[in-house]
Amino acid sequence: MYYAEQSRRGVGSAVVIDGSIYLIDCGEGVAARYRQAGLGPPGFTHGLEDLQAVFFSHLHSDHTIGYPGLLVAGFLNGLRNRTEPIQIYGPGPRGSVKDMFADRPANILVNPQNPMPGTADLTRDLLAAYATDLNERALRRGSGANPEASFDARDIQLPAGIEYELGGDPAPEMEPFAVHEDANVRVLATLVDHRPAFPAFGFRFETPDGVIVFSGDTRPTPNVIRLARGADILVHEVIAVPAMERLLVEPAARARLGDIASSHTAADAVGSVASAAGVTKLVLSPVLPPTADDSDFDIVRATFAGEIVVGRDLDQIAVGR
Ligand SMILES: [Zn+2]
Image (cartoon, rainbow, N blue to C red; front, side):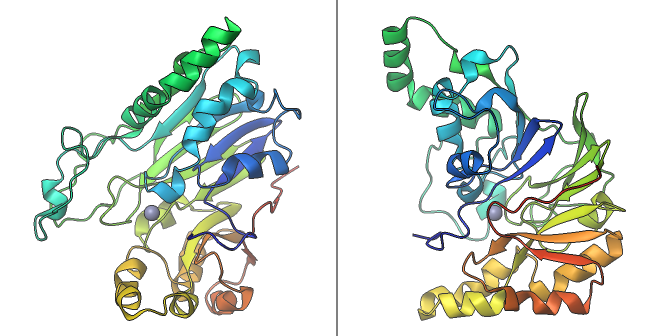
């Protein structure tokens, strides 16, 4: 199993503002970590009362595999105590797969009638797949939260004029654009470069206490620098290539390392992103591979003079008050 190292389970972060909770990505183990972090009211039938919104950076399974648990077990965890649905934001459908595989025809194509579903389709189809469980339990209880009404999932609409062309740049230079606003926070997004994934987003949370930016999965791109300009905290993904080499001992796996590394940001490049953006603090997360040692990131210090945190599960970092 990929996430064997228990100090780092799947990808997920939370921004907490005056008790309101915003999740960024839902990887493996996110529900357990949510509980362990003390988010939401305690108790078996509580938890999701204070979750306002979930933001998916992209729809790779290591960022979404915990999502069915959130959707399906939600009725046990406080959904019935809510009056407003949980807002879900994420990439829209990519559309055709032809653009992606033009130069290497796919001999496997899952769900050809909708091969690249977006966040709204993902949500609808997950609830449909679990309908037996959801309906059996609803029939037995006779009341409770309707999961289909409890999650308001929408695809993030790209600004007019932003389109992806075959072989083109999946993250053309752009101004960050607003995707969510409420009494606590304004959330902006930008396209990042996690090719061949498209669209893939980074997010900027502007709160009364400070600004927190999440890069999502990306190679270095000017869009992240623009998104993170002057932020208090930049949570940036990172790949430790030497640690990957220690992990990938089989030649076939090792041969793919260049391909993997090209869609991520290496430890010797992430500091420059943080410096160019002028952020106060750099938090390295998600860490690839999860088994990497802190010493694999000593090199970040060479290009960033601010505070550096090598992310581990359940780290809590304060901003402002
Ligand atoms: Zn990814």
